[in-house]
Image (tube, rainbow, N blue to C red):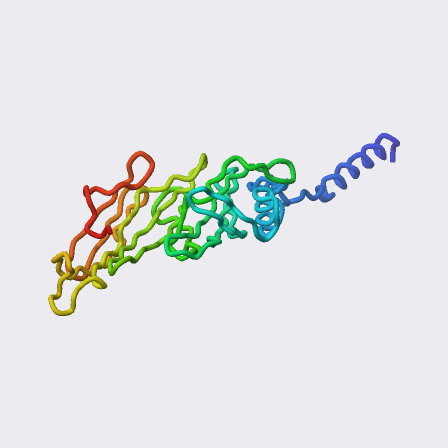
Amino acid sequence: MKRSGLIGFAVAGAIALAGCQQAPETSNATAPTPSATPTVSGVRALPEAEQLKLAFRTTYGKDGAAQVQEDDAGVINVKPGQLLWIGDTAVLLSPGANASDCHACSGALAIAYLKPQGDGFAVTGKWPTLVRGSGWGAEPEWRVTNEFTDNPAIYVESGDTAQGYSCGGASITELKPDGPVQSERVWLSASNEGAVDETTGKTFGGEPLRNLEGKIADIVKGKSFAVQASGTAKFVERYEYRDGKFVPVQKESRLSC
């Protein structure tokens, strides 16, 4: 065989081998995508219990318990309750009993607004006794709810009894980003039963027995709700959300004191 033939044969063989070689493998794995959740840092990276402890210490300068002095409320002994986040604002709720247990003395749920500052907090506002309970110095029975408003709200029921008359109602305090806003009182019960004479069936002022209980119903979030009353009479009272808070539609509540 001639040399040119050998060269041609070798080239042809090389081309054939190249055609039979397996193509390099390509990976099916996709590149990792950035997490949709932003990285939490600073005070928000702490466990919830540590955030609550730090917020209380920043607000009151102590751990576990502190005293709040208010001219119209006396001394309230507050303790850590709950820490909420409204956007970038932390809201500290601290329930407290009144140092005095008199009939007219009420406990309170202290509210403080804080902003993250480095690894800690800075207080931006305080409302120590905006949310109050009933008398005898007791803490309010409170809960945080999303039923009524776009922002979380504090719901507290409280009442009073004096000389045979009793009444009760609720407060709704919306925790807005720039501060709490309390709606007008929502009346829920009224009774003169303790002042009614058993013989006449009326009070000394001549009033017949009145014993009413109301129940909140028909809630339209951020707009309205109703109070359905039953007992010695049946009727409905309504509240509407106007100018950032709930106000009664009726001029005077039949469930008030």
